[in-house]
Length: 303
Image 1 (tube, rainbow, N blue to C red):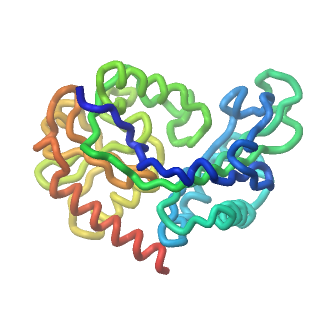
Image 2: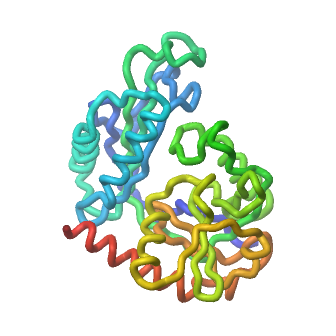
């Protein structure tokens, strides 16, 4: 059987055993980076987060990531406890403490903080937010295109848990991932409430049909920064791109498919529900978009 992978698979790096982690203003060794069992994030998944990638000493699309973090915090009525520059300073301090210059990934997490008692109500979190920044040396390491399986778990309506929130409450996506793994795939392809193809459990999803790039309407998917950059790049470079409803029939018959995300940028998809997509390898449109995105990153980090 083909080895199982994930879209966040990275090359092993022994330096990650010695990383320093930011915890509420202190930068401590990995073994000492702990939070209370009463923390809202641990107890209830009550928090928001951002994933950021370091290229040549610069965090790519930092303004967009800060916009999304503060928007999500406002949506759940969470006071981060510092302004944008304060968060950026914490990120920079963690980077400098670890001596990282490129090929690094940061997960910046903010929860509602330590609760007085182990119950749900937000008013029980009275000590202020908890902020943690985990920064690792990471280089994507995928030996083959990703395999997807469609699962019964869907991306839901905004009045349940809005998919646009990068929240700590990821159980729906985890259940989807488990279902895909049980089906022998690497990741789950999730539909929306109307049965149209939406996203995967961890990444945004695109297909290519007859020279056109299609992705979901965006109504039920995470508001991916890399997703938007790909849409923008297509529009700027004369590539027809459509945010639209489309079905599994359209997907199975696609010439190419790929995922987008901060960690892996553009990840090719070779198989969905046992159907080989195109040749099963990275297609020419995916390769072109990857090159355009690479040039965008180079421009971003040299500005």
